[in-house]
Figure (spheres, helix red, strand yellow):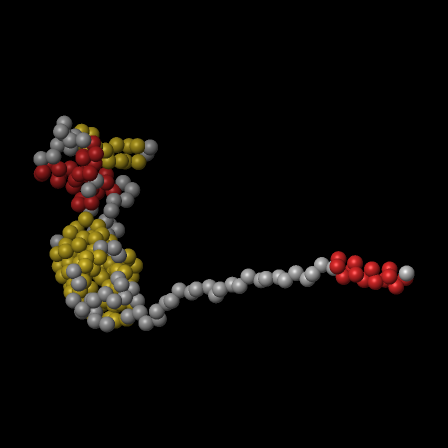
Length: 219
């Protein structure tokens, strides 16, 4: 009888024991990394050329390429003590006109005339053909700051409007303690928006060129 009980216990224990579970771990694929070509092109050329237009002497010292950046060192004489900078420029190559660029100030010399030097940077594809390229400096500008419109620009703008026969009348009024140029009257056939577009046009604080510089930046 005891043997029978022992056998039954062994049988029950064997049947009741849970089977070991198989744990399946997920397989992780390696993360893809971006391919970076270490052999971006580099090239440089000395330009050392200057041009004079609208009384401004603009000189390009050198042009060089680093990867996707085409850089050019440009200096120009300052017409007065205002904060002048390059307002419009373009890089022309292979029938493409690239008008987006960045500037980095290199130096600023006060004097009569003063001199400002900047590095222009254009971003181009690494395979851009720059064997017959040119950089155009289209204009420089000194955008009004603070009360410049009243102290500097309003007489110039009013005179220009009179010479063109445009009946816009300007004046400077005190607004919260600051002199502000205001449009007092406009012609009956002109809207306020049209008058503001004329009065606040950048033509009154820009000097147009162009100054062009050709170069061959073969890779």
